[in-house]
Image 1 (cartoon, rainbow, N blue to C red):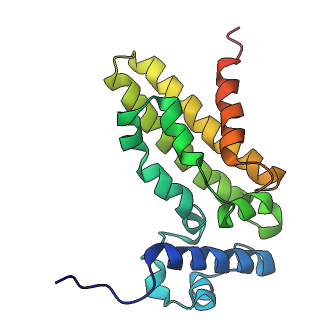
Image 2 (image 1 turned 135 degrees about the vertical axis):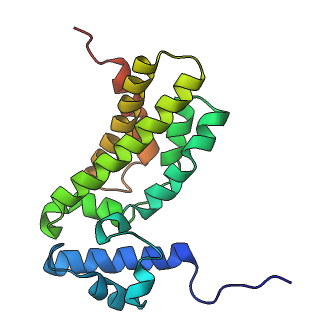
Length: 186
């Protein structure tokens, strides 16, 4: 016999929290918004908030983080380019895209920069590990990983600023990945 956990599905509640946070950040700014206010607006308890995110800044990144959780296994099955492209496939505009496009109005530009750096590094480490397993020199693997991480975050930011939904993130990411090959070496 299987038992189901009562309450909302985890992704649904995280999305509700992220939407509530976005609304509050627009209304009163990032620093002035408390976790308790976000939880109350989303209809969950303050203690439940931490089941979905470690901080109010990290909350916005939940959809992307789910995709990053699959990156290592995607790297086992395909090339770094193919695996990184999976991050963007079908990603719809969400609270993160709204936050990136309205960072100044929400008062969270510095927080987004910190959180983006964490994801950039996470992608870079995953890609570098996969390339080292394939025999690439460790230094070259680290540099390539950093380039892939930078491409994902740069594409995400450009996509959001252009107006999410106007073009697929995958298209913007493809352009960012192509830019890696055009980096001048001198």
